[in-house]
Length: 484
Image (cartoon, helix red, strand yellow):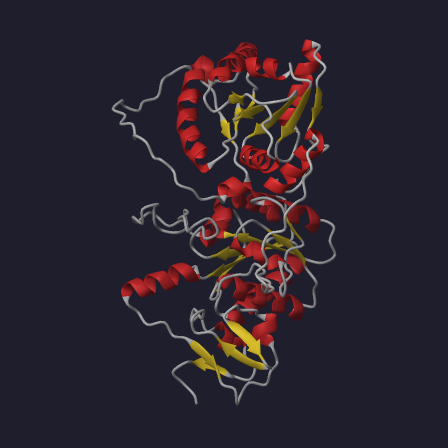
């Protein structure tokens, strides 16, 4: 698959548009690869004209192209190789790839997002080296590669693996050219690049003196900001309840975790993620471990992940009788990536009503006998349900499903404000607080903090869930309108 890397936010927009045309022209899928830094960048982007398409969408029948069957595979393989060769020729004139003349016999090759670092580094060093800027990192444009190999020395600047560097080495070997090609000897293969790292590496090759400048200091030490679940998040209550349930059942479960907001259960104080790998892997890996683990396996999976990649694993758990507790963390939305709806949300992308697919009914339809649904804020009920599930799995050797349901607090608060509803905030009664620290140290709601041994709730952060009041053994947390 042809791979392309933009070097700026403007290029990211422009290249995306042009790659649709390129994909159609060459009848191939293409991959637009961005780095973390570029994805988190901001900048002014010129929009350009939005094309108006008047053609009717329809399916073009071409079974010999789309049916990958043995009679056609050999031909398709040959066509793929020919397509790559054609792209090698044509990409030499693509305006996102270009040469810049300069002084000396050392060519600097920048790939994708690394180009902005290279441009800044060369300016800092005060040198004008020849430069090859590449945005098509596979296949490389053949004519540009041939021109690059005429230089005595080539420095390749790219993030992570030496992908372009290896292609240039292969090309040099095939053509008999002998330039000195360097790259990862100078730049790290882990993490990300920056202008100082690139300037330091280029200075060594170009023989230029360079000392990295320390940025200005703010004069204060910033407080740590560990990732945490939002105030009012039902996942926090679910973790708290399930952990207490495991303690009551006198077990030390293997905690299988998945991909979503609830992955934050990995961090203190919960520490309820012994592994987290990919969407749906909590069930797959958890089932494998359940075959030999003396302790029960408890797998956490979100509602959207359950629909996306959890159902096949659940069917497998039933069919092969895996003893695993599956806790579905249901906040009725795909919260981590921006509150997109899913089949269990009951609405479509624009908020229009859609059929709601029931997680619990789906679990029962798959053959799970133990299925319980509990409001995540009801810590006592959820703790009891989780304990029953753990005992059921240990005694029966079959899977159990507990659905911990609580709508995402951010969505709930937003809609309450839109409707003009009052949010009940909570406060700590100092005369009743015994300083046990459960709300701060064990439950760890970010709206609750301890200052000079005094616990207080920040009204600007409180979501009004009331879970802290429910778990406080001294009954020292009450609605803000009550008490002294």
